[in-house]
Amino acid sequence: MPMEKITFANQLLQYLITGLTVGSTYAMVAIGFNIIYNVTEIINFAQGEFVMLGGLVMVFLHVAAGLPIVLAFPLTVIIVTLVGMLLDRLAIRPIRQPSVLTLIIATIAASIIIKGIAMFIWGKDPFDLPAFSGRNPIHFLGAVIQPQYFWIIGFLIVIVILLTLFFEKTIIGKAMSACADNPDAASLVGINVKRMILLSFALSAAIGAVAGITITPISLMEYDRGAMLAIKGFGAVVLGGLGSFPGAILGGLILGTIESFGAGLIHSGYKDAFALIVLLGALFLRPSGLLGSIEVSKFKRF
Amino acid sequence: MLRIRKLPIIIFALFIIVFPWVSRLIPVIQNYPDLMIFAGIYSLITIGLSLLMGYAGQISLGQAAFYGIGAYVSAILTATYGLNPWFCMIIGMIVAAIVAVLVGVPSLKLKGHYLAMATLAFGIIVFIIFNEEVEWTGGPDGMSGIPGLSMFGFAFDSVEKYYYLVWFFVFSVFVFTINVIQSRTGRALRAIHASEAASSAMGINVSRFKVVVFVYSAILASLAGSLYAYYLNFINPSTFDLFFSIKLLIMIALGGMHDIWGAIIGAFLITFLSFEWLHFFGEFEVIVYGVILLLVVIFLPQGMVGIPKIFKGLFNRKVSNG
Image (cartoon, each protein chain N blue to C red):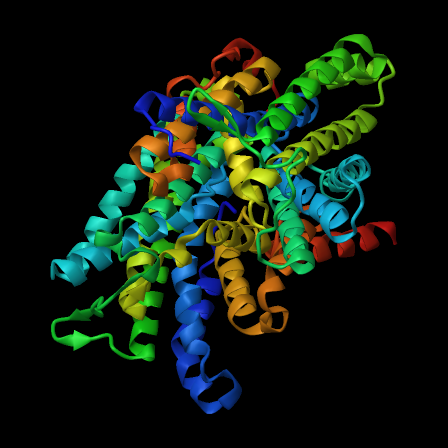
């Protein structure tokens, strides 16, 4: 194959495409944060562990156990969802005097337990997962696009559509939104707030799992990836505005793009730092986020 | 904790003074003074952190970064530039204080989780810098050739001498902190913890007090980092990673965040757990830490210092029932 001449413009396009793909994963993590935050006002520090588990459970079911993708995918999502529900039942609900401090500590504890167990099961090596539709790249204006990129962005779109339908068209979804607005009032009108909290953990674990399953063929997955994914997902949350779903998507895509350009153009050793610097910058300059509202945040308990 | 009783402090001080002589007589605990140096270094950090968590109600997940700033500033200025170690220690504290103001002022104006996340991000950034700035820090391989401490020709060059030096710092900080808690500042901090709205209505500048506590905790962490560097004469980035920040959090939660004694008890327990008692678990000790942290949060929200209160509560109930 003849070497194509790679111009600077091609390279920029490449960074943009890679950034949007990785950003889609951050957006999924950010949506997971927001679902739990909107119902419970907890920032779930274990959010990244769902992504890590999604990748590694999928590797186990698809590569080691040999299940076809169409079977392994939903099974993985179900398993990680159960982990999310366990997290609520074992770490969040037993706390008798919930405060910001105790809830943060509980989710941190849960995250290092999940990470340790993953290390116990899978060891420390990164695992690869076959791409869903092969690894023959598509060439587009001099940029190389992996078919897997379309799967990641596609799943983000599917998740967004399903969530919108869920929150706007179904009774349970509306009940969850009610809990987010005012848990006391919600329980007065007969909504089981505890069940809604459980459901929020289940939902956000499921979305985390999808993020993990789709990103693993590109970036591999190992037991200790969770913390970094969580902090970048949270960066997307803050950038977009805590609690805002469109903000989460926008924030994720921007963060992924900045990271990709930063690593490509400035210094690849600082790849992980760019997203965090953006997070700090967003916190300091506009803590309500691009699409969030400072007025709304004043009504939150924490 | 309005009144600080002097007796426990004196007993504890005596214990610290006598301990090295006792440990020499008992072969099993002969290496304990070495561990106690680490317990002392960690205590310095946890005292600051417990003020921040217990009194200002804020979490820092970047304390390892301030610890690292103290260690690296001291290491670079002494090993590379040959400056006086004590002077470098002070420079380290100043640098940590400035950085803490820069991180703390914006994020402590906000409510809730923001300081936790800002410090988490900050901690990871600093960790990356330690790894990447190879010309300055030696990168992942670390730095060696850091001198020890000495004063007027007297070198703190043995475990025992360093032990007394570290614990001298711990006691000074401990007593100073207790005095702060009992002062006007301490009352303001307790008021903030009870109700931010009420205390700001009383004219307390809530976010300023929080920043002051955060800066104080950063200075103490930096001091601890310098002491660490001068003790081991070698540092590398992995000492200052995110997991160390979490370990500090576990120390506070386990010891009890509403009592300054909790900071010291927690530092002791986790030092001995990680250096002595958890060897059996090897790398999987992280699971044990997670379980400890979760159990403490659920069943022992007051930490170890809350245990006597629980027993007292049980006893009182029995009496009143009878």
